[in-house]
Image (cartoon, rainbow, N blue to C red; front, side, top):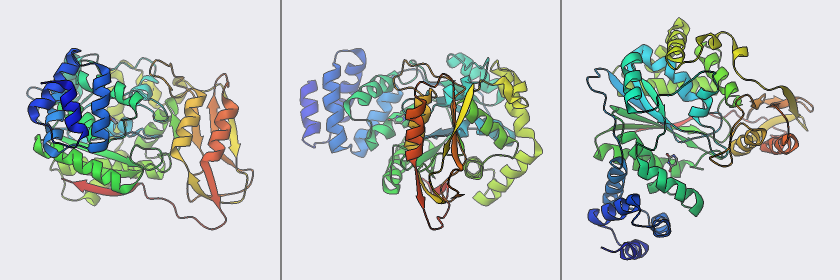
Amino acid sequence: MRASEIIEKKRDGSVLSGEEIRFFLTEYLSGAIPDYQMSAFLMAVYFRGMSEGELLTFTEVMRDSGETVDIPGHSGFLLDKHSTGGVGDKTTIALTGIYGCFGIGEIKLSGRGLGHTGGTVDKFEAIPGFHFPEDKKELIAMVEALGGGIMGSTDKIVPLDKKIYALRDVTGTVNSIPLIASSIMSKKLALGSDGILLDVKVGSGAFMKDLPSARELSRVMATIGAKLGRKTVSVLSDMEQPLGLAVGNANEVMEAMDTLKGKGPADFTELVATLVAAGLMMAGKTKGMEEGKRLCDDMIRSGKPLARFREFLAYAGADPAVVDDYALLPGPSRETACLSPTDGWVARLDAGSVGRAAMLLGAGRTKKEDDIDPGVGILLRKKIGDPVRKGEPLAILQYNGGENLEAARDLLGRAFGFSGDVVPRRNVILEILTS
Ligand code: URA
């Protein structure tokens, strides 16, 4: 078999055999096929897509390219909740406290932020002392001790995705539905969950800019899940504007903890309740979404999720006192407001621009090697549908140093658009798709 023939076949729209896909991927992982041939192959997939058979083989080979994690003897339902990535998404942090209270365990890999989207690993690591499990053994120990465990992504699990993703990032081939679906699902399938709950973000701050493409990505991921033996549900949620009010790292941890205290922003609280309700249905614990959302509300009011979150922090080496004393978290040395230029209603709040403004302040990275400043970010004061007066703060920029402050303020100001007429608020939940 020759790599160039496989590339030509894909380029010309023929369907590759399982053997050809296996050959191409395994030879690439071993280094026998070079990056330039994989780049050409990825571009061919970008334009030609993949048949269902190709996609399943591609995903299986990715899944099996490294270690897989099974949790021996785990009796309850293990859920892997995954977000496709957005701005202000601190959902995993809040859910960490809640699922366990319902007897649902979690197992997942989380990533670092890159570009305008933040990463759960960076957010948790904003909590002083916080350490993720470093390997499979430590992840299993965490699941056994707490009923659930989260680990940062590692070279050992699905190493092929890491190698291919780095190439996609620089060859214009990230935004391909079969490549995104196989990348996400291979990592989910390598972990021994009982069900996969996908929070597929839709809008300007997300990979999927509109509902039809988000539905298609969800459909493709559900097909992979169904064929490879994993129950998969997708919640399509709004990323036209940031989720909640805080965008950064430590400030997002605070907002997640506020939500566990019943004091979170309405959109974020709604998304958390929906993901809890979906998880409860997947685990066979409830029959309907409304019942699950009500149970989530009651559970938060009981204070138990906050207690579990404290236990999780203590296990991870962080001081649980942060829950009651946010001053223990890193913060900005200075703050300044971005003011409204007009009276009216907020009609637009571009999530991508807010994410990039936070990145300019140091909350995110432009390159993988960059350090972040966990204490900086943006606190939104207005969201779409809110009335606003000229000169009123739209958002607060939290910063240290302030090298890119004016660029960030400018970008943030341009993220907002206004209308002289009343603008309806946006729904955070767009659709729920079950396979
Ligand atoms: N997240 C992933 O893990 N992979 C992609 O390709 C896109 C988002």
